[in-house]
Amino acid sequence: MNILFAILIFLSGSLSVQAQDSQQLVFTHVTVIDMTGARPKKDMTVVISGDRIKEIGPARSTPVPTGAQVVNGTGKFLIPGLWDMHVHFTETERTFPMFIANGVLGVRNTGGKPEDLFRWREEVASGRLLGPRIVACGPIVDGPDKAAIGPAVSVGTPAEGREIVRKLKAQGADFIKVYDQLSRETYFAIIDEAKKLGIPVVGHVPMAITTIEASDAGQRSIEHLGSILQGSSSVEAELIAWPKTQVKNQDYSAIPRTIAARGSRMLDTYHPAKARNVFAHLVKNQTWQVPTLVTKRSMTFADDLVKIKDERLKYIPQSLQRRWRPEENFLLRYRTPEYIAYSKRQFQKELQLVRAMHRAGVPFMTGTDLSGPYVFAGFSVHEEMALLVDSGFTPMEALQAATRNPAIYLGELSSSGTVEGGKRADLVLLEANPLLDIHNTKRIAGVVVKGRYITKGQLQQMLADVERIALTQP
Image 1 (cartoon, rainbow, N blue to C red):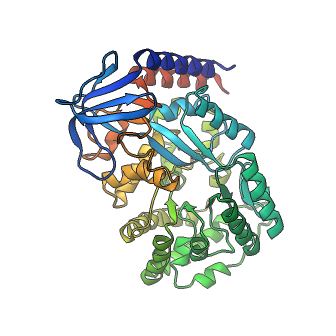
Image 2 (cartoon, rainbow, N blue to C red):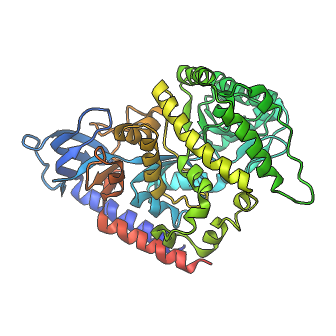
């Protein structure tokens, strides 16, 4: 048993005893931002019994149960726990404490080893492991010529597509993640089989499929903005038929040169009317968007980020930090000047695209694509919310993208996603009002995990342990 796992088990157990001894947890004189869209409710008492919110009422008239653990919330703000709806993690020793310390109490893992992910999911659900609630798909489903990096399965025919859906569903997958190289016939077979089995399909939009086709077929969420810019181009057919890159003598710089040429053509031909048509399908079908802007930013400005002394790097082992450097990272080291210029232009256009989609009523959730360079477990969810605000969201709307919206997506709004009576007691206590400044979500005074209160001091100790673990890893 590794050191942090033992610490987490001890902490989880001590919190269980604490919750059992006090039986109830009460916040007094706290401002509740319930995330329904209502105005903040000041000077409230919130009574938690077990893992549920039992009662919320004015402090002056709501009694505090005898023997309850009481937290004075004067000057503080209570919000639902945050979600990261697009992550990839391969260990829990560092990642889980970083999630919890940042108030990220739920994650959607969009590709990984099922034997690990499903075990961790069960251990968290049973209380044996302190971590965020997990929904997961297992391996990514791609075509024969896989583009997916990491755990993935190749399917080449509609029959194979249907079979992998049945197999992953039987293994315990919460959803199916599709990827770039799937053929049209196999993609639509996967969608059809998934509908029969009642399991959502999410992921990339395969290159053989348009955004409108994916949305109309029922793909539940599109990651990284998919091919929406392509579908908004007046020369969409030309972009689809763009010649494939020919790599000769391992000159991989040919790939970014091609991407830059094609992408510049795409941006030059953006057509607002076509974009509005794409948006209309996404709204009609309620196709969720998880733009992962924080990863897009880190990949775009990697040369700048590597020069900054980021305090969060102390939580990252040296070996991983080296792989993040542009000269070492496979996705970055072959970039050309024209590609770098194009990617910066594209990032600004994508911020504008998010703004236009949001105004049109397209639904959004926060996701970071954790595993990429300069994306930090837990911490980067706060950056993603700030980028949504930069894209035109109000602070309330950005917070809802991390709280209420994931609950809607998961079909669980009746039991989670807002601070209301009867709902799960997964909460974050803040020291400042996030509606005045979205960056105040980082000012965490404590979190509540399944009704158990973890103090600021305990959260800081968890991060200190992560820092020590990172130093011991090569």
